[in-house]
Length: 111
Image 1 (cartoon, rainbow, N blue to C red):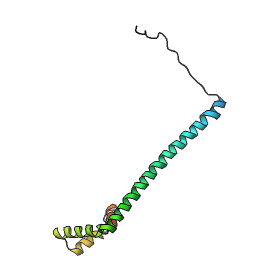
Image 2 (image 1 turned 135 degrees about the vertical axis):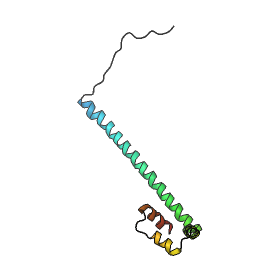
Image 3 (image 1 turned 90 degrees about the horizontal axis):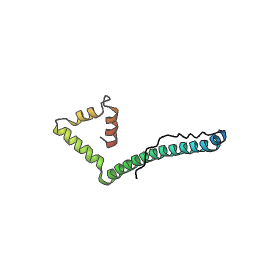
Image 4 (image 1 turned 180 degrees about the vertical axis):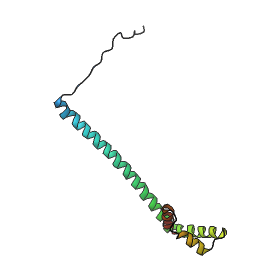
């Protein structure tokens, strides 16, 4: 047999007094704040660990396979195929108008 719809709605409201606010609500709020802080710190730690791992892999491959010199040789050969001399290439790489990000990448790669 199906239930019939309720014919009235009753609303219950719970209010905290001074004692409850001091002894229940404040510790719960402090716990939530610590939880939020721990989440932020763990996110920063994971990002730092990933950056450190990427940096370590880069230097591992550079020391094991001499990646930097291979990249530089490849870039120089591509520049020569495009008709650029070594002096022109050095002038472009040392140009102060080069964007900071590109200058950083070329410095890291040893170009």
